Image (cartoon, rainbow, N blue to C red; front, side):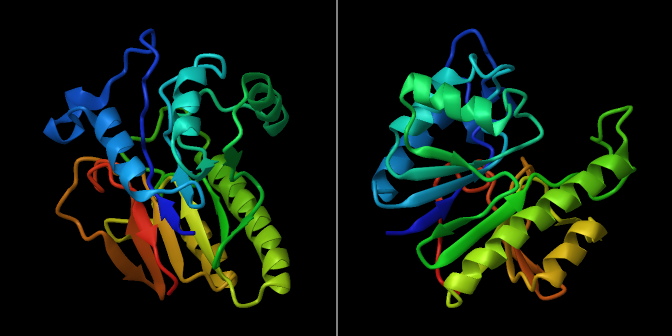
Length: 243
């Protein structure tokens, strides 16, 4: 029973979404097929895979069904976090009702909560851009409001994680975010402050594409940060070992 992670699947299995990532470079060629092959080779039904965001190009929950059924068909339990392109994301009650209606049984969500998985306790949130002047930030964004909201959600998740850790003190709390808490030497200071407050030592993040020469893991103020975007991992789920 093992823990894996891979972010940014950017699935488009429904013909009408028509948002294949193959236009973004050779590494994305046949990416859905390659992902499925590597996943089935590595992951068993007893394992868990955390997918921290940018899961489907769907614009609604109904449109996401094909992609979610594809994920559900793969081995293992899956824990989904939200990314900036997950426009299909709804309330947890709507997700649960939708999953029950369509027989989706292996997927749960990381959203204001925490999960106990083998040797680990899983916490996290989407996060947000590290800098109000970041070039890709959508125009008209209330930067302060969004960063405070993500800080609050991370804190809520970690409070739940601490409750689980009180029952299993030997287990390490690890955090998954979509946005990198630190990128190019710039930190989302409020997110990093919460990570340090809860003594988090490992974070796994996605969102970054096309940069294949940067280190897969680096350390910032005592926290190991690891990039797990699907294209960076060449569509091979990353095994997470006990530290």
